[in-house]
Amino acid sequence: MSDLIQSFGQWLTEEGRALKTIESYVSDVKGYQQFLSEKAVNEQQPLSRFSFVRYKQYLLDRKFAVSTINKKINSLKVYNDFLEKKGLVQENFIQLKRDRVQIAAGSEHVVTALSEEEVERLLFYAEDQTKVSQRNKLILYLLLYTGVRVSELTHIKIEDIDRLTASLTVRGKGGKIREISLRQDLLNLINDYMKGERSHSKFTESDYLLVSQRSPRLHRDAVRNWLAILSKELGIKLHPHLFRHTFCTRLLNKGIDLTTVSKLAGHATVNMTAKFYIQTTREEKKNAVERL
Image (cartoon, rainbow, N blue to C red):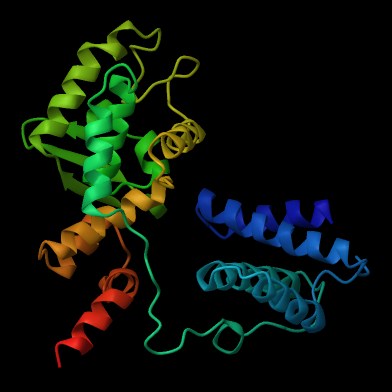
């Protein structure tokens, strides 16, 4: 099956899919194939309605998040399209409208975000220079105050920062470009890092803002690893996308309009922003009813 996966990846490339999208699709199909392998399914049949339905139930039984299951279903639908076009299967076994897991009305997609108290704890922790380097403090502030994805964070170039307009140009998914205003304290941190830690690096000539000891561009795994260490220190489960959720949620809570938040986040549509962030928590629902 490895040759088939490779062929699938090549087909996605020819279709003009973004690199991250290709990686996601291929990873999901590999997960499906691993399931088939564990079930000792005939590998001559790469996809069938029977095996897809059982795989979907497998994911449901193991309590995968609805969004994760639907992402995997979408990947398998694209895989099905590929197999059909290549003549490896004779029909399309997956229909998204029928097969995606539906969320019941009133059970909105719940986005986890840091509380204001947790944000304060992070900011105070970052002030301790014995525990947090200039670079890592800058990473924390960029994640909190720009809402960039981790892949966008590690690809920020020095030329993307305009000190005159106090703005950051971000190159997002599909090559889309957006501009995010930078707070003065964040600009100050960038200047401190450039004049301090970064000026002593062997990669001072790198075009990228964030460098590591071994590379002219910081790898996203280094960000995740540091956040894992920080999680243990503070007792808060941290991951890069949590900061993106926090950025959007805090803006909305402070009364920023949905269209502006959508543009800052780089979402394809305002509806996408609304789907993930216009929600009421259980506690808010409870308080609303108690006011009656």
